[in-house]
Amino acid sequence: MTEDISVESHDGWRKILLNAPARLNAVNAPMLERLVAALTAAEADESCRAILLTGVGRGFCAGQELGPDVTPGPQGAPDLAALAGRYHHDVVRRIRASRLPVVCAVNGVAAGAGVGFALACDIVLAAKTARFVQAFVKIGLVPDSGTSTLLTQSVGAARARAMSMLGDAIDAETAAAWGMIWKAVEPDALMTEAEAMTAALAKGPTKALGAMKRIFDVAPFNDLHTQLALEATLQGEAGHGAEFAEGVRAFLEKRPPAFPR
Ligand code: T3D
Image 1: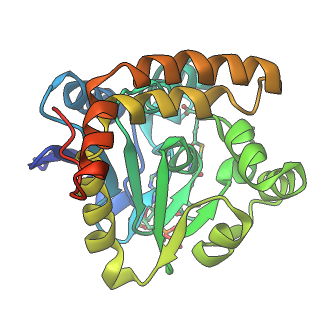
Image 2: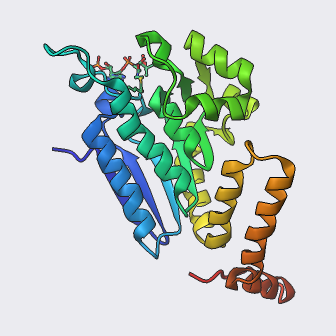
Image 3: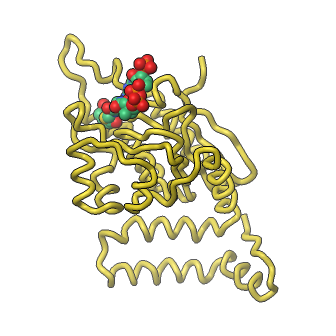
């Protein structure tokens, strides 16, 4: 049986692939457990300094697998809230809480929880052929996997609500124009560009990048004064660290920095 989560180790970074292409990488509970495990293992590996998340085949992730997990059985309806809260949300939390930068290469359609997984990542690239679908409404569910927050933050309330209430597919170029993702690229260039970006992040100041994630995670919710205090605390830590010392030394010596591992 093919592994539905594949992991490739590269020099300083890992690529995690959703690998159930026949169903556009729709996820189920065991697959989500393996995804969380792969994210956790990457983080536990001291030599890993960045993660790339992508999908195999023509889809990125079609959300929850509409199969046995969600088919009402003789005992009644499945506990969807428990499923989503336990599994999908663990993925979003794991990506957001990670000390590592996570790049997402959206290779094809992202639907339902798949939208949440992509938007939880730090930098999202998408093939111009990819699309984003808040599919929940089509099966009578509400947005989950953090999409109500992540979309409202990135595209604003009007677009987040319309996307979610209508379930219309948003193409990658529109997503980029709306600020939902970083960039839409030619499909043939997606993996090369995403891999190069992840490799570059892996050579970056890992501690500072981790602290940046913390700053941006709370920025939309904090007032300016709270955020200034947090920036000062984290800058204080960065300013006393080896990464800053190397960054300044490299600048003065007119060479690229070699940030410590
Ligand atoms: O349960 C809980 O925990 C609650 C939380 C849920 C979180 C969620 O994610 S809810 C949202 C679940 N996802 C969806 O509702 C999306 C369903 N899929 C679609 O709407 C469409 O497939 C897409 C818009 C994603 C793509 O459309 P298209 O035309 O490009 O492809 P297709 O022909 O519909 O799909 C290709 C195959 O993938 C097809 O299989 P087949 O006929 O070739 O054997 C299709 O059945 C399969 N597939 C697509 N999505 C899913 C799926 N199989 C199982 N589960 C899916 N979600």
